[in-house]
Amino acid sequence: MKISRFDIAEYLDSPEMISEYLNTVLEEGNESDFMVALGHVAKAVGMRHISEATGMSRTSLYKVLRPGARPRFETVMKILKALGETIRVSPASGPENKLI
Image (cartoon, helix red, strand yellow):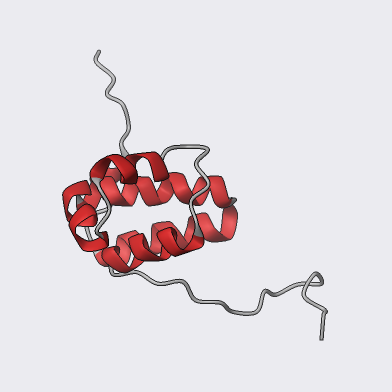
């Protein structure tokens, strides 16, 4: 029996799936998890496309999207824009959201 390695990028085949994946990671993970997820999405869409759309070299993209990297917010926003994605902010529910 041959076991193949699971690659999430193979399942990120629509804008809706990509958005759902990134939103889930934003809600349940941390910044490192999000950068890894962004790397998965970039792989699914194609590094060449992201490179051309952001004006960043493929080498720079791989560095920025590797686990443990801490890219600037501006860079993350460039990548999201190239992917056709955006970040939205909404109030969190629960007792921890009692600032006002």
